[in-house]
Length: 288
Image (cartoon, rainbow, N blue to C red; front, side, top):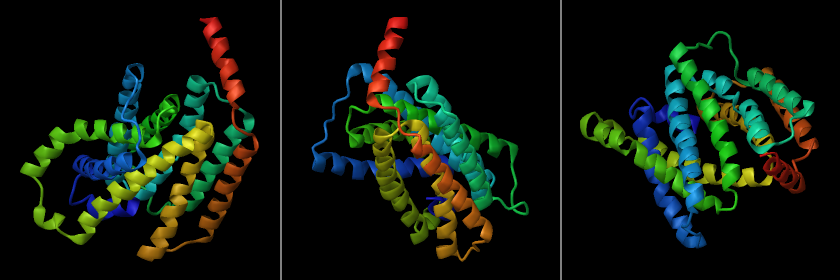
């Protein structure tokens, strides 16, 4: 995704790029809904929660992430957004009553240090204050969305992803159309690297990526799922080496080992079981 954004962001600005990305993804999601016979129904009591998760994650988080990356660098974006799992631990504890153990806190710290080893380069690391603030907002809002999605786990992953992307697309449509009619450089957009990037962002990063992420959240605590985000800079660095001939140093392997160790450490602590969640839910109801 980061490579696709780099190939297109200076032709299509962040907000229109996200809008076009979601418009493309909607086509794939509609086909998936029809093929899998997924239900289109969302209970009325859950609709506000779905809108809130979409606005926080699919709109605010993605737009601020791409804006912050454009204003700083992909490296800076990787470092700052690595804070997402830490916020997922916090939100998971307060909103979902998940375990907050010393092991989970240590695993987040260990994996964060690993990310720094993978992507940090003092000679190329620059932080634009506004860009840094945008990336920080992206980290917090994505963590918040991921925790909110746990409350929608009774619905099909494809259904939740479809409506989330639809809400985000409609929210961004006024500005997207304005840009398309007033500022778009159609000649530059006709480049295969640009429209190919948009298709990749829509079909792979959004449709496949969001569905798999939402599905993964069904199987484990949000605080544990967040740790898998630390593999993003690993994949990004590997693809940079494979596709862009960017060097891979010893620090990469040290960072990879620390990230893997952090994830294993967290998983050894286990999930919050369904029985524990049910008991805590009953206890909270009695308290109120």
